[in-house]
Image (cartoon, rainbow, N blue to C red; front, side, top):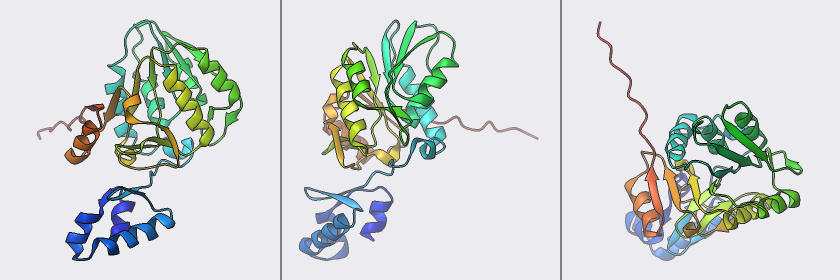
Length: 254
């Protein structure tokens, strides 16, 4: 039952499980250790976090939760100020953001992502700055030393950071070590950082650390994020914004 909850993306607290199942906390902790050894969760103080589901390739992730990503992107686009250099990190949600970028704000869009760059090229009124290097096939993005050096020379006004996992205790995490290093450099060169995060990434963990949550100025989450997750994230000292609700179907009379 604990494994089913973790697989569903829920975090668990040992003391609460012990009370629910009428077992000792030692027994629950043994189960959590066993699940952690199988790679099904990450042990944290007092309980465990599920492993993020955002570990597949970009091609696999683009069609997943597309409507949720569009709503996150629309909210994120409203945060952009005119005449700035914005950086769109690789990722399927940031790819959705390209379609929502305003055309009348004289923006320069920098990216290391091949699909994002292609999408920007198909938009009018946006100037593209491509960060090159060897393309990592799974990411469809450049994250090697050449890409890192290019970002180190930038003064980024607003970065939209991609994160595979977001945890109030563990911070931001990723699955690819080179990509994680690249993201840490992005954080150091950006005046403002926003992360658009789908529900399946919240309170999960990934093996490589990007940085603590306080490195992000705004976290945009889906409109239906459970209240307890919102409270947990806000306690971590980060500004949490909820995305718009999906439009309701219009009733038609006969």
